Length: 437
Ligand code: NAD
Image (cartoon, rainbow, N blue to C red; front, side):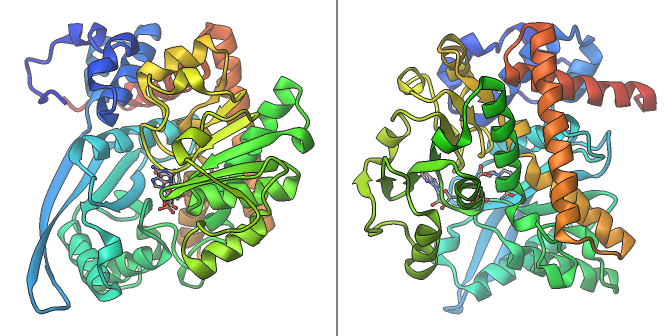
């Protein structure tokens, strides 16, 4: 990312279109910026607002000491990026990974701004991460690292400022530690500082499955639009973590045939449909999907290119690139992960007429249920799961309709339509508030 300075050149708006993004294809920030620039140009967004919205409002880097189990002291680097708080408090997950870096967190924070605007909930966008390998750390080390990270960010997070949530390699336990640490500093229990908590300490019923449920809802809408029948619709999913496994379970329950699961250590394929409940139990017991008997073991990358109606990348970024997009044989690409497709791959998917449900719409079920959790915590009144699911369905269906209508009206693909819709909403709010410049 270019440094933000008063010398920002508005002509940059023309410099990073998807067609030219190849040399930086796998940098998520470049991928985000390429789509933002294209959508902003189509909206004729004025130069000032373009500059305001293109860059994150605040980026925090912390170096946190952690006492390790062997008595040594380790220092971990963490980030929190707040892209925009124009429409409400920042909202976005925290990721623990050896590969997480500032450009990735910037991209993820921007995507949160656009995602919250697409589903029209009153949040801005933020994201966080710590460079670490959580699989090599004990629970005690993870807890101490999480608490110190939280305390370093104490002035910057809060129910009205920035509300973290789980992301890759963080979970309900991580959120409980953050909530507790924040509460200790505030001298009172503040449940609404994070979402994705355990249900008994202010979590929402239905939150755990919400991203997967949102994917099911938008896939149902796409299948109906394209005239398929769920019962004869074959699905391949990459990633069997929170998002992928819940999408798989809910879709299998609805009648979709899940024929492939690609995981980090290999793929599983069964053209007659995998028994997802059995696979789920197997994974709970063994800790991996490898060794599951009722499936053929296949190469995980090759599995993405097998014939199916719906392909759901639900693992990580940059899985559909200019290298493999031409080989995809799906009709619908439902992006469960954030940023699974590079900007260069977008053009290839458009040429192939693959119906893309873009990440900022497709996986927005998670943040939508997080919004419900935040509302419930502030109300002190907790909803039945059926209420959460009904409200989620309403928001996902109407957002899908908004994006598809926008795409048809403006003759753009679904992704650019989602960006245009989102940028337009955020820009409208900023114009209304005025800029304190
Ligand atoms: P997770 O850590 O629970 O699961 C990720 C899974 O993907 C793991 O099982 C991992 O082994 C697998 N994986 C990682 N790299 C892979 C690869 N290259 N090939 C195949 N499998 C791979 O994480 P999650 O919460 O399910 O998040 C997955 C994606 O969805 C991320 O992009 C995240 O930002 C996005 N997302 C998550 C939520 C949420 O509510 N958890 C909401 C919106 C978006």
